[in-house]
Image (cartoon, rainbow, N blue to C red):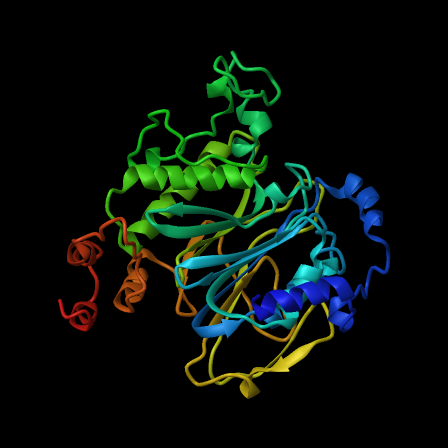
Length: 400
């Protein structure tokens, strides 16, 4: 048996409390006490996101240690948590419907460092879908022979099953059970007109759970799958995803401007997209957006916001290390975080943010573009580069 699995089993049996960062420090109350509070604050709170993207293989224990405290200790996001990190072309996925602050599985990940180039994590505050494992982010799907994972924070009523299942006059007002007569009533909405793809009625990807987040992820993949028959270059993919995000926001506008749409999207071992359409629910002061920072030489000390724990990165890093950390709200209180602008889509690769489509060619030149054994690459990378009117040095660097 793998020694990591043995360690996990021992941890689950012994249930130790290792340090302040692994035990409840601010809310010394039993788990079920959150249920009464949840009944009155559900409509004001939202989930939280965390991602990491790295130039060299890096463990995520420091950032995840602080992030996990928000899952029922320093914050009320106690309805489950999940984490996915890429290991080569594969994904190692961890999901738990228990609060992250009290989860032995989360504790295991904090105390057994594993290294990756790319990871996505989520702590849940349930507003749509019951507190069940199938509703815990990040969600995963295979497309084009590539593992994709997705985590979302916000409200997109257009993808709320109770809403879209009742939009048709022939459908009942509540979400129906599937049968031959009402199959179209439970079909997730179509997006894709913004990238030239009309609805043919096919839904290759469908949600397993009941969240608007998973339905939105499936809709995004359905549109991309219908649009491309060869792997797109990263600038083209960036442009397509940005168009689809704009389409979602426009479609959701009918719901009185309540759209809050933040997500992290992993698409292979090196690449992660982050998008933000931030906001607050009516009556709430909780701001839901995205922030990021890039740690690179010269490294310094960082202190977590959610527990009294710090690290001097200069003592544990190398000169070629660089890490981008993305989070709903800053995870440290002594570093400079950048808020993602409203409507901005960023591609993270090699621990760097790429803010515009043409910037994404840098990742292509690092040979971090989409790679698949079952779908051919776009043979016209040079055409894409010229279409985006890239600077001459880009062509020279790529020997074009």
